[in-house]
Length: 88
Image 1 (tube, rainbow, N blue to C red):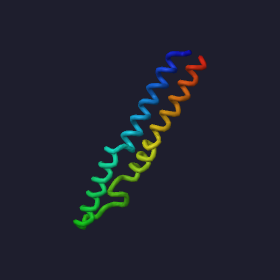
Image 2 (cartoon, helix red, strand yellow):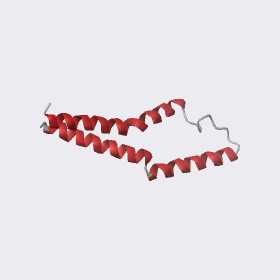
Image 3 (cartoon, helix red, strand yellow):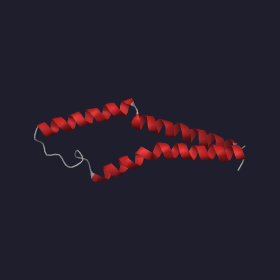
Image 4 (cartoon, one colour):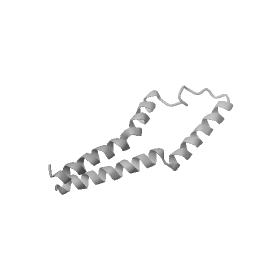
């Protein structure tokens, strides 16, 4: 067994799990709901809102990328743990 691979794999899986929880957990849902409510009040004030709620277009690409980072981290972590157990 390669201890370094095991430790790095476990750390990556933990970080991936935290990323998923922060992205899709209850705190994230509350933030999204408050942002939607804020957009609704801005629309009621007749404030012109850009497509996407006033965000820059690159923000959507960044959010899409960060949405999968937790899963990527867990996948790489599992691969490292398997390699560590096999002694590669």
